[in-house]
Length: 163
Length: 157
Image 1 (cartoon, helix red, strand yellow):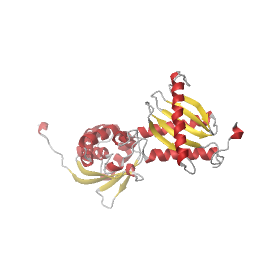
Image 2 (tube, each protein chain N blue to C red; image 1 turned 60 degrees about the vertical axis):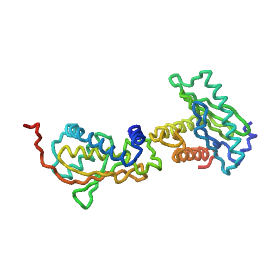
Image 3 (cartoon, chains in turn red, purple; image 1 turned 180 degrees about the vertical axis):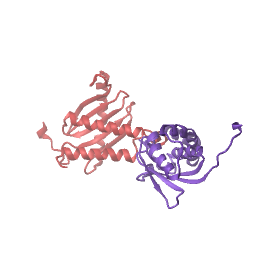
Image 4 (cartoon, each protein chain N blue to C red; image 1 turned 45 degrees about the horizontal axis):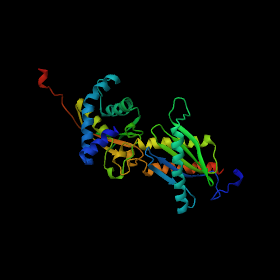
């Protein structure tokens, strides 16, 4: 199956989309990353993320716990579609972090990356000015976007074997 | 501290007023803080302004904020600046564009002014540079106005 991956833009293993979803399943942050940003690509990526939410619901409602003392659930690979795999992580406050990657990735590297994403989310939402901003999620700041974009770029460089 | 500042912004609606109120709050804190400081630092009096500056930056900031600060002097020997990085008050804080005139750490200016006031040094303080506004470090400028004479209050009778 791995052998049949073409890699749309010739780059396998790259993160193509990242989403942070709130507890009412409302999107708080949703960004797609393509070398040559194609509009229809963006839309289909958004669609896949949306689909993944149903799977997240399913997985979190069965009360599966990864660690004994933690209610945070790394959900692993949620599903695969076309050339992509979707990975998810949910907190016990029903925050969901979804990452869409080309190809299949090792769970350990995805878990590490999503953990970093979660950390950046915590930094951003700890900003006391969140509630005085237009977007109260605190995730619509240039700093948050920039940091996530940097981490996506770093991950993508590593996965394509280029440094 | 962040919740305090944002609540004040919501209440006063005016950044200038918030700046003033933060300074006032700091002043009141400083008036009392000086006793704790002197006791813990084991000193009773500074001989000159240079010592004062040193104690504020090297001992005070470390004691109450856990950070190291530097003193820099202007050509006017009655004026010095306390320069510091990694101000714990601003951790996680991102100042939105519309609050760029907010002097977020102004409380610290008031604390210095209040503490010195309690030992009869009348100063003015100002937040000259701020990491929150993109400066490489934060700087509080302290200017000595006068050394007040010891006042005998009515209660002393």
